Length: 159
Image (tube, rainbow, N blue to C red; front, side, top):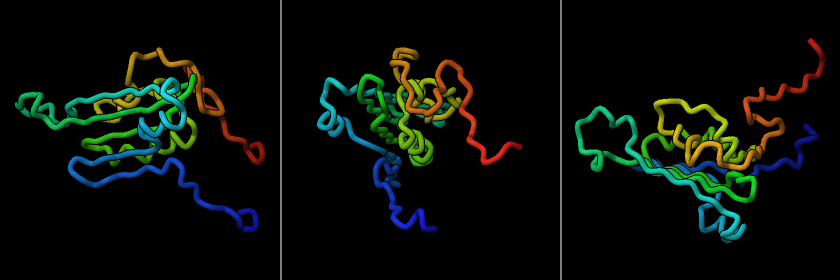
């Protein structure tokens, strides 16, 4: 169609996965690149390292269980998520959904407002840091914070 004749792909915030053992998933800026772009005073990084619950049933010393490492890079007063990095089991499956969130401008508070799916490794990304300490700012057009209902679509005609 004519309206798409100049359309092009945006290569910003492309989720990327390296299919190694363990898998590596990444989207957005690394912490050093975020600091270079926004300044150290405007960056807050959240990190977590843990033994994935998949290994919970094995009678192995916890220090010897494979670990998952995660980092969430946030920028600005509203803590907009500008980078998300995971190495560990399941990181490949996490990236697509979090890619959508970053493309939509998600903030740390948006992540905090999501109810975690337990037991999964990805729940760690929505429970990092002390809950409720991020500024109440959202990247959404309709704020999902404080239990607000999601926005409704704009309909072509009434039903």
